[in-house]
Image (cartoon, rainbow, N blue to C red):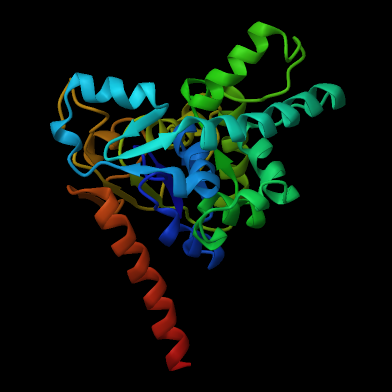
Length: 294
């Protein structure tokens, strides 16, 4: 399973179910937005400082301004505290970026976070059960991770700011963008030799659009024989239209060489925060049922 995470699934605490999927070997690679990458760690170290706003749909502009004054960044009904989450992680990231600069060894954005998590430096700050952090589970499994568009995330913005103010020099300390696509092509070519790979997409946007293109890139631009994605499943409530949010139906992907005419394809039009944990639980319970009959 190749899993893609868009939206704000980390702040919605998908890690409660996704981390176990990773530990059980049900997920074999992930493409996620920079926001989902960082927000799982924010929740890990600052959960008790989060504020829930169940009436968020009724907030006035003045209410929103009040949250800003308190340094609370709202994601739907959840406010992420700047000091306890963002600034706390920033200091550790800056140290990792500066270390890479000294070593002359650039890392991908997720590799910097893997290094920090595996070092144990953040353990004194944990505010949830670490078993509920999907990124920590991924780091321990050294799961292949791809983060397209990382530079538009909060930590990507911080990195740009530190380059501007001189905290980090001109030497490359981070690999991203096209480097991620090159690494994804290498992983897909190697992995698909032995097994088919299914595409399980949560939401729309770049987290799904970026990785699904690796198949036509290999077949059409590199002109190599390659397996198509073996199945396609998307959970999304996006409306399919020219102005929609990356809501192309599976059949349209056939014309681009991403899927085949006989590829099993499904769209679940619903809220992913409800549906994804249900599917994950079904898969995990299915494994338990098989184990109990052996």
